[in-house]
Length: 248
Length: 248
DNA sequence: CTTGACCTTGACGCAACGTCAACCTCTACC
DNA sequence: GGTAGAGGTTGACGTTGCGTCAAGGTCAAG
Image (cartoon, rainbow over all chains, first blue to last red; front, side, top):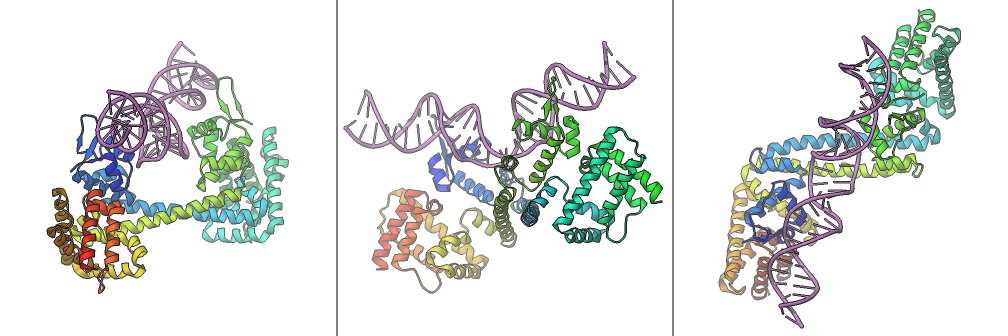
């Protein structure tokens, strides 16, 4: 019993293109080929195709299917490996769903302000991981509470102050003003207060403040916020001067 | 302030290749191009890149990102649409996980027998949807209970009988034996009993049996099981003869 | 002038086919 | 025997987002 490529396609519920593809990659060669080039398939080929399609429905890739059919890999073992991949996929999708959901909530809740804040790459909550790693898990929680407690107006003010400070520092850096200049140190003082606002009752120590400065340099997101890597280094230097003189 | 492509790549945490790609597709053209062809980016470009990367992390495609950045689409609206897609993805992945898990369980539990049964494309449980649609939701449940109740030996016997019947019918069809021949009708009688076994206390009526025959023809999976579309038609005809003479 | 580091423009590769395009082949009917 | 029409063949491009060579200019430093 022989069937043409269309017959097999209809019988198995796929397309002739797919069968040609499987032939091309050597996954399912036809059982015979006519002198006119026509592909013909017999029952063995059809059985093989059934297995292919079944494994494909489970989500396996064609190379993995080929291995299983070649007997190089056990069916169960291949499926277990595939299951791990699927579970990772699920986690990834769920994380994305969580991110997108919170982002939408912020966009709708905080109107446009939050949107700009976030999309300018300076979302307060983006730094959750860093904050938790560096200053403990509940530091982020209290910081977030504080942030929400500010209200829209308070948040806007907070960000305006940030812009004023970072803008002033950028200008000072561009002008070549030394880091220990009084004007720069005044900006750093404002910066210290600005940072302290989010830290609850305990303002940052000299050490913590210096650590923050190092982070500005090391982390490109922060560095960019202060006008590029060299500018961030400049800011850190100024912070070092301030910490030595005022926080020692 | 201008940066080279590498600077921007480091600042934003991507690669120069990505930036060139974004230039190629018009998503992020450099703010200026030197006479030597070098790409230079300014702060506006960097801000734009920040938004691009942020949306990309949320899983949006580059065309969708381009729309958002062009102001053609609202941020929130794009994200909501994306969220729908993500939820579909989650469902798809979870369905696959369920399928793969049950398949693994069957492979390990039923040893090799179930594997062959399933991989031959004749898994009893595959037809859940059809059964529910045609004969009600609890028909499948009782059928499944029956199937499990058979035990491994019973299942093997059931399948052996199926092979014998379908093989006999295929031979009769190939030999050109008329559908109302006594020999063929004897096979059909066995088939009727074979089918009835899974239907619980009430054996199929003439009407239901004829409907099953129609399904053999219409559904390529069944058609294949009986040896191709023409053979399935032959089987249906023989079933019609049987229904008319024995079930009327 | 040479050496690196950095830049450029192609172009292939990946996963699994869908979708033309251009061109045979077989069957059926007149 | 001619002509549809259905079905077959082999390319080859498109899809998504870049990674990864390849071959060759540019620039700053020694």
